[in-house]
Image 1 (cartoon, rainbow, N blue to C red):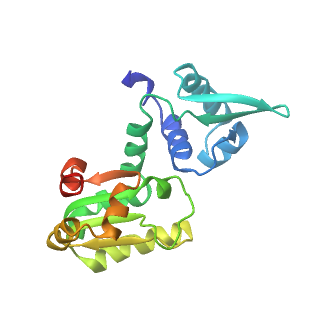
Image 2: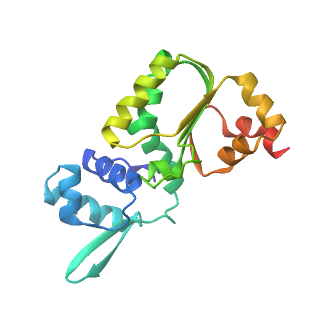
Length: 195
């Protein structure tokens, strides 16, 4: 099964596009433009991905459009891999030594897909002993790339545990949102919430 996932650089770029975009349907030429690869290589990868039921296609007005299948057996795992290797999540992991001691870090699925945030949404939560200037630098870089503000929150372990124990509405809302864990164990993260 793993052979169907990672066979080429083009497939990796296509996966990143499909799994980090709010758009769900893409025409071949749009994919070519956004992944900056040759059209034949993109078509070949899309055909392979369709063969393995990773993507589906449909015809609209003489144009074949592709979408990544959310019912694909490894959808969540691929979303997690993309989140941990590119964009904000990739930068958090790459710079984790500079950021301090991070116990937990997760990113919201809505943020990964480029969805619109409300004022109360949290895109990224970090728990641990953080070096704030380094964190702010990583966030600022990603905000400049995305040209949008990133809603993030951070706290030390003691504050996190206290807020979970007190069933703080903010923490509970953030913890139950769909997310991808970047660092730490999700079961341990939710330990006091589900009890």
